[in-house]
Image 1 (cartoon, chains in turn cyan, red):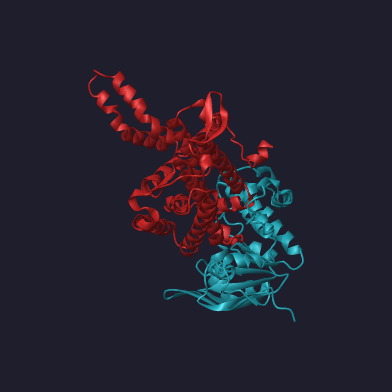
Image 2: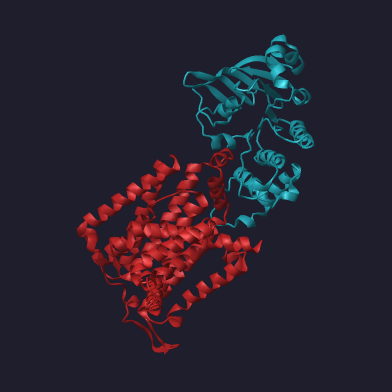
Length: 252
Length: 353
């Protein structure tokens, strides 16, 4: 029996007296797309931070392909196959678009501690970075400084960085938030593309219910840090408790 | 060829190219262009401080680490040579031992400081480096038997590098090729080599990771770069280069003391050179060091002449009196930082666009 791609067991974090994520146990099968929904402050992003390691769990464990990674730093989890696109755009503002992607590509290739070769000599890495940019339709902005990009383009780059890491787990934290209407389809197509590949495990925090409905195989609902619903999209959306208490708010 | 030598990091501005070529040619032919011991002394100081400022920029401009321990590593290099030459004798072997021990000590200190304190917030790191550097300076002045205390150490250098040495009997372009000139070229080529090495490091895959850490440490870690390791490696490289700069200075001066190596005033000078030249670009270190050392050495002379020329006009001669040179140096720096926040290099490069 194969271990799930990702699993959390009784994952908990307390900030003082406040329990932000409360004993969340959930496993994510390889090749699935799970949407995580819930009202603002439900602990969705905090749950992501616990999984990818930005926050240290007060209790509980995170298992990646059956291996306990709870004690590992963020960078080590990344090298074990965890990829994440951040909710608030989180890039290297004074470097160019190409350099940003390139940094992700070279992390994946593990050549960060190469001090003697020329950055510009590494053709294979550069070509791979170019390919990633083409996938997110940013190839024409390759030499622009990231700080000069539109918000939508920055979100696309954010996704490109995650793609460049070639992870097994793709964590999207509201990938379409703040995007203009005509830019949203690009991101959704990308998520579809990733989903079509075998063994890509996708976790998606999203407020837009139409997006969730069209993409997700499964929905889990967080509220006050607790997992309150888990099931097929149609079931979860139809369930009275979710309808009333959360999705009404979230869909608005 | 040139492209590879400069690691693909071209000046990207005509004015900057011209300025760099002027500095390079002046330094390369200093003994012939500017004969005399004082001007050669200035040229050698510029060479050493280019290395020192460039290695500091590796930390400050590229990695975003504020450290006040840079003169400590510079001093370790100086004292390594001084203690070995004074204790063992004026041989190349003694020098090798001194350099090796100095590098080892710098390496250990840089790793220890890095691992213990690069995890903490930037301001605490700066304070820790300040504390360690001050402790080292006190130690160096108290261990009189080894370091010579406040008086420092004077020593002889290997025969080839002494003023009385003649490489050839004849003069070249009207200049005798003495041991001093050989020492100068040792300093010049070593500095050039170290500078090109630093240029290579900042343009390597590793160098880009350093910039990424400066820009967004959190995301660099999320991309899979162990930030504390990269910072520690950067600190070690920077410390090693500063140590070698100290070695060169010790060979040139044939004297090492607290005031020429460990003083906090030198730390401030290096900081100003990097800021004036332009942080995050090694060419900034070249221009910053050259301008700063020139101002330090010749501003007084210029002011003396101006003061004499304005004799008779009220107030002006007093303001331009050579004793007021630090005031004017200060004003120059405030103005340059105010008008060129990205440094001279940043300014020159921006003009082209």
